[in-house]
Amino acid sequence: MPFLWLTIQSALRILRRNPLRAGLTMLGIIIGIGAVVAMVSLGQGATASVQAEIASLGTNVLIIIPGATTVGGVRGGLGTVSTLTVDDAEDIEKKVGSVTMVMYGSRSVLQVIGESKNWSTIVLGTTPQFTEVRSWPVAQGNFFTQSDMDSAAKVAVLGKTVVQNLYEPGDEVVGSQIRIRNVPLRVIGVLAPKGQSVTGQDQDDLILLPFTTAERKVLGTKFLGTVGIIMVATQTRQDIPAVVDDIKELLRARHRLHASEEDDFTIRTMEDVAKTVAGTSRTMMLMLMGIASISLIVGGIGIMNILLVSVTERTKEIGLRMAVGATRRHILLQFLVEAVIMTAIGGLLGVAAGIGIARLLTVMIGWPTIINMQAVTAAFVFSLVVGVFFGLYPANKASKLNPIEALHYE
Image (cartoon, rainbow, N blue to C red; front, side, top):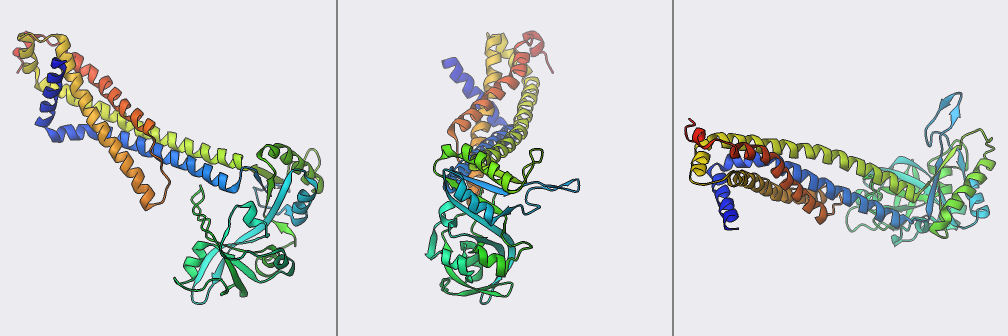
């Protein structure tokens, strides 16, 4: 143990002789470990954000959107043709068991005008069930009712972002008037803030109208009763597979699709959405970690090169130590300790840099990050492994020097 401590002290003295060279040598390790820690933190944060958003929407909710269709031999993508209707949604609610609630809607991006400002936002025509299906309460005022739907009332509920861009602080929002396509609408409520979605979209940047109002007076449509999305809530999460099968059977029958024809709609569950987003995040994280690992390899090669140079510079010193009794094991340990110390310092600085970058991204951009201590520990241990691996060759070369030739080395 005293020998090991003396070896560590000696290695630290040697590194202090040329701090700039040691710092540049450790730079690759710092960048690599910092990138790994930051990427894992972002990945963990994204996963947690997905889970939170899915939980807020409800795991017992499924989404139906117009599907791909083939017209004249040309296949269109999702949503290219309006194949869903209000009657489809009402039939699902009436005829499919275990369905507790159905919401439908149609949306467009339009310019909204306030008293002195204007703002381009998403305008969504939907039903009074929106707040319950989406678990999205009203912070001020009220949501529109079935009576508003039946009479196509000119009322609107605003998201927080729209309020911030149309009104000054302290202005009375509820009871004010806005205009969309020259249609005057009375604001009856403001939604509670929801924040960004997992895809980075601002969920609060929208205006909600009764579906009938949107269809007949604001958005317009080629065919009355067509919708862009249907959301279905089931009694429990376990009911979803059976409900999906029943909805497919019902919609295929309603749309008169033959057995050989594809569905003209797509059903997605919240778990499907979660798996897709989480899979994309995981792939991106692995790709970025692969790039970061290249920095670690480059850093390891840099350490090996510097130690090889150090062996050449200290050849006489090595020969002298061997002449006074140092064994091959002592010389080998000396250079391995130097390599491990450099990678350990680089690893610690890299961990600090990674945590700092993750926190900075959260503060400046709002990206959710979670510092995973297991990942931090694994990254640091990996940096030590890199030090041992790339330090072994120069250490072995130094230990095999002939003492007599080393003493005469010029």
